[in-house]
Image: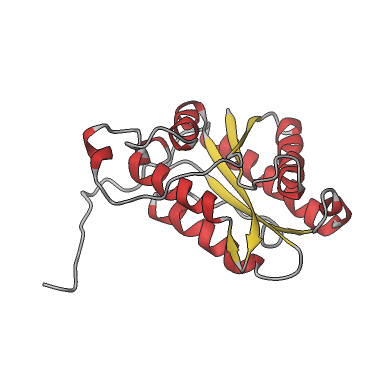
Length: 204
């Protein structure tokens, strides 16, 4: 079984990466493979609600950034963990653009698979950023994996997150909980909802 970890920071080897590496190390000790992917620091597109992905299921019509490459990795992953730095109490905007496009265009690759978010901040705003990242998981029937505390670690300069001993323990506990869930389900996606989706609009 394998977990895809997405580093949503424009800094490849910063604190977000270090926190995710702590998760990956513990996953390995629990017998779970992991793959680290980075969104990079090149421009990414936001969703323009064109609906063209419905004509080409599994991919966004814009194929000039990392969105479709990351979605494709979920075809062989059994779970997902997304990490982000906190900007103005929110996740990195580029990461949000990618997540929205991935889930909308390639939702079948994500649906029902366990997921977790990790937020890294200098001081505050992490809980708001964490909640923002968790909300798409809930819409995709993805079990949200918890830890002993919110999945948050603190640090500003590269490497400082390692000094947050509680934060690093939180990352390890998250990994253990993710591994336990994957072992319990043998990596099978959640399949509890078999009803056709009902969309209700309040403006008629």
